[in-house]
Image (cartoon, rainbow over all chains, first blue to last red):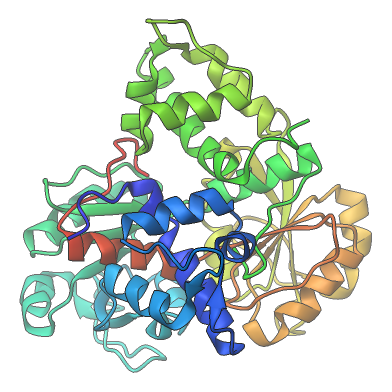
Length: 217
Length: 217
């Protein structure tokens, strides 16, 4: 499923899901596209178009059933079961992400952490994981059913690490290293780009406008 | 300027800029919307529409002048001069971001770091900054012309910290705390949302598709 959903739509789905869960927690049963757009910081026509790709058209003149839409978005995002992820690179950023703790209730659980530094291998993280040698990646991926790799390694080694990640059978990579990665077909890479967020803020400083988005995005 | 550019367009501008700078570094002089879309992971019609908001229409049948478009995007994003930012919260994430070093060539420079912990105040970061007490925020913002605050504080104190940030006159906030922030009108907040990136990867795992975007996003 899902091959015909545009990437630009996919990128908005997590934000819709988050905003709708927020509405749900406030006891809201129905939300129209105007409201969802307001929360997620887009426009109503875009919301209707995005959700129509998922076969969700809402009730004319009323809106979308919030519970139903949350379930549907969760299924489309493949989050009915928790996805298992590994952090590769136990430096400051890797350790900060391990300590973050906000992933589990968004459908992702960090189950392993790898490094190549003998000083770090074998140490225990605050979250109770033991740092494993990168050489064990392939066997651990298979044994622990790890589907996502979060790369927090220096830019200079990112390509060689992602080669190992792909060879280990991982099909989804979130890359924090400021480096362009080449991966085999079938492997999805997302670039975590903090600088882009700062540039968007710079736009708003210049324009005097401000990003909308009451549910925090 | 810029009030009439849709937020959804603004969010794509950093990616266009990054991809075009990448093309520029490879000596490419002209890029059409198909090529830009391929690099940035969107579609050609979207690229043309986004750039038309900036008054850029390209040369029919040829494309956009890369140098000119880079300059234009830089100006629209308000990045002709480097924006000065402060990190608030010198924990693992704050320290990881300070060590990142990839902001300056994207138009943002981290000029100060604040914390409330007496153990941290006065210590020197690897990047040569001295951790300042949060109580000095207002005076430092004025003296150092700081325009952007990067919040890397625990979720439980994020609202009270952003209140201080807004009171100090900062109009742009990048929030890493998993907390919904209320800010006065005129203050722009962006939520750094690593979980959303992981959910997008989860979609691609489910659908078997993969995000396009040859320049790394």
